[in-house]
Image (cartoon, rainbow, N blue to C red; front, side, top):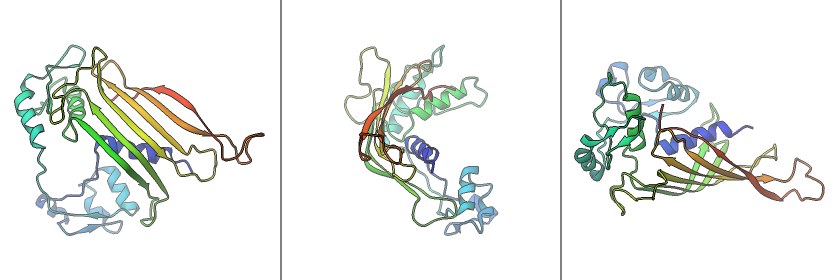
Length: 262
């Protein structure tokens, strides 16, 4: 079974802070949805125009949505204060780089007619309120479920550690607001792993992996990613002279993941 796609999607959602939209306010009652309702495959059509296409597919495949009253989710106080105090001075440079930025959301007021709106949206994504200084999550678990099966997951990925360190835009943990890192241009560091992969046939799957990512302040410099994974030394019956339980370290590589610009 190829587990690469669901695992990649899960990691992307975790790092981006994405979550399914499950709240519905009074404005959605005209569509027959109200707080307290449970949406499933039998009545999925009620939310067809209220959720993303991806979530709609998941509901039709068996995911349940418990509708709750809408509410306001305020930014953390330091992030809100930083935005109020500093956003007026943030600018884009000639190459789309963020200049005069200190902390908070760089561009809280967006104009749809602004030719640079796409770059500003991406900078807002980078410096959103999900975290501003450091992110440290240990013993996280990602579960994958097959369509139509709401019981036990078909795959579980334990993740030992997810750590992110921001060099700029810091608000609560010293050094704030910037941890000067010489002239490296590194804006953020991230480490993820070990990621324990469930071993099932075919037995050449890698039992664990990890990655380290550097993100740079220049939109012209793509992310630098190191990734390593364990390589099994056997192919079903094993290689001559090596036990089936032996594993080697290998497959280190560099890669690009450019989310800083469009």
